[in-house]
Length: 448
Image (cartoon, rainbow, N blue to C red; front, side):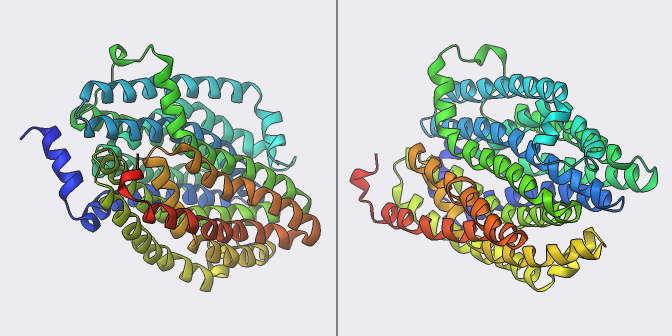
């Protein structure tokens, strides 16, 4: 049997739980390692004080914006690559991945140039204070310089996953994450390079991760990357954007809401910004589990939907929810119980611990509901129902969170800031239930 035939058999016949776990666990591990090295930045920079640590929270907004575009290109092309491979059309798959790869390099370069030119006003707009700004500029320059390779890496990572090669994707991301942790220790703790050292470590690790992912893709993927495969048809670009739009909304609104959060937190001082920065990193760590398992389901849903194996798409959704719930609870329950100790690990200031403890407990309750919302969102995106998927993506970080953040902060002050995102997570999970039931009850004759 050819590689394409073996891949078809695997995606349509392998027991669902084993298939989703085999694709989801490497993705989860790679995302957790990525989250860990973000937390490593927070930890080592936290040694320098609350203002340097708050700088990493300000830059988290820019990193989320970079990831938003990268996820759109990566998941948009990946979904269409899975569709092409289900139709056994390798040339079409190569066109989608090559077009997205070189588009990512171009967009990343443009983002980097504009960001570096307007770095200081951009950081102030995102909620930096005068005391945080010097540190944010050092870390931000490194983040922006690495932008092109970060975006291209996300395209490679997502397309490896959608081709069923999540293990190679995991190795590429995990290698960069481990190198970054070592770099943080060496440059920040040993050689006292400060915030700049954390930024350099992040940039170098991302470059190494990109090289590893590119080598794996060239050697292992069915799709090919080359200038000759770049599409000259505007419909190809529109297809990638349309299918990837929910990912752009999900990540882009995360960036926007993070900026609003920083600005609303600014009147409460650097300690509040530092505390919310730590909580955001830990929440992202827990969220990585939900996203990782959900992304393990994505190629299964996309491939089987195109192959008209709708029964596998439906059963896979329920399996993904069950696995995701168990995994998230394993992190959120200890996070709730040990909230003050987790904050203390990153920042020893008593005011940061006081603010962060309450916020982290709320966050651990909210993240539990991601096991409902994330798989349903992934389902509609993977089955190319971009309208529904985009609406569901809007809920968590846009339609619900931003109004809640503004209203609750104006009414309850800092307590409203601590409560807003968890409440948005709970409501998003509840809103996802009718969409899940609708899909599960939909007759196969009406699926297309």
